[in-house]
View 1 (cartoon, protein in one colour):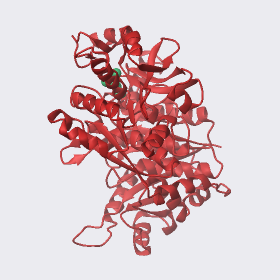
View 2 (cartoon, protein in one colour; view 1 turned 180 degrees about the horizontal axis):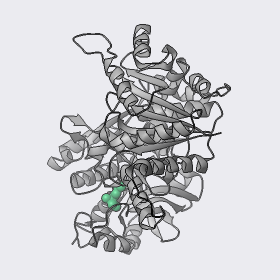
View 3 (cartoon, rainbow, N blue to C red; view 1 turned 60 degrees about the vertical axis):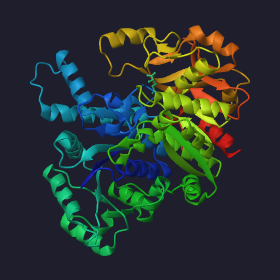
Length: 538
Ligand code: GLN
């Protein structure tokens, strides 16, 4: 059995299409089906790694090292699985493989054309993904909004696949119904237009997920049904809710998974959503707060705060907080504030724990270092992620080991004490401007040293974590730093790279060269985040 559910967006972006897609997958999984998920991004970038997070939100990293859209993180978290590289594609990556194949004469002398060869490559990848996962269902989310020039070829792939397998392909449109302030009435017209646009691509939606600030009334359902050529029960109401964990539960209220199974002529199966319901319940009812401050730089774009750049970090904090039955209160702290005055640093005492997350470049770096120093000296629980770990090493070198002006060579190429430095192979890559997909990416093993905080947290010796960085702890300074009290808690066994550092005599001070947030799942929170929150509560 192989069933395909395409999900596209109508009216506008940013209405939670990724979470909706993940929730559909979750519901089918809860009925005993094996589910996998694909994200298609219509831009020409080969992957998300070359985009600024203020452009596109977080760059999520898969085990195989693919730098991809944050929705892949949503799928992994909802489905509780690790997804392979084949499950992510962009226009750039699809064209790249078609052109590569053409150069290798794999089209046997044929004229290679945008249609059908590009949609056929998309379909080939979808088939490969469902086969690889041995899944019963695959959800395929098409990025962007219908009517955009750039996703036409992906809609074409959906159309072609449905033509080939009419009984196995389902199409869901996630739309939005605005309630203009002055009018005060929920408007269906934009959704009607979106469906028309989809129709002109040869696709009729089977289900419309109607996002809005409130639930749809029967009048709206009636209107959409009539004008969009559907039955009322095919229009699922998806009102705003407090936490994303409630989305699958809410869909079920409108009998979403029954509808999908019926449309695909599958027998209904018993649902087991118990664990998820428990989680959603905690997410809604936990009242005792745990206050976590995130010190970083990417927060402002114009008038908006772009917390999306740290989506997985936020989620990992929530998972850990819910595990401890606490209400996560997450604050964004702009590290540049600490560069202006030391007084501002005192505000860090208002938090139960501090995270310095991943990052690149020089903006706000000295402020981050100051905040790390403050956490170290004032015993505030601290977790450093990637750049956060590197800067914790810089701080320790400067202020504990007496290596004044020690730095990472990312910021100061000529520093006298390059405690964080480029790896050899990276030097060669950067000389040739080969930036795309060339960082140390994806899952690597790390061996934990017995008796460390990290070893205790994980409860095992060998772990695997996901990376995305060019710079590394410089082993030439290892002995000196260790002599001064730095604990090297985890090391990559193949290359002896320092992956985790920590401090003794501190309630919790841990830095990880990898990104633990990419592995945290709502039903299986990450050990380092669990420990941070535990210390924060204490
Ligand atoms: N900028 C640092 C590096 O490239 C850290 C990267 C990160 O935090 N993801 O090594």
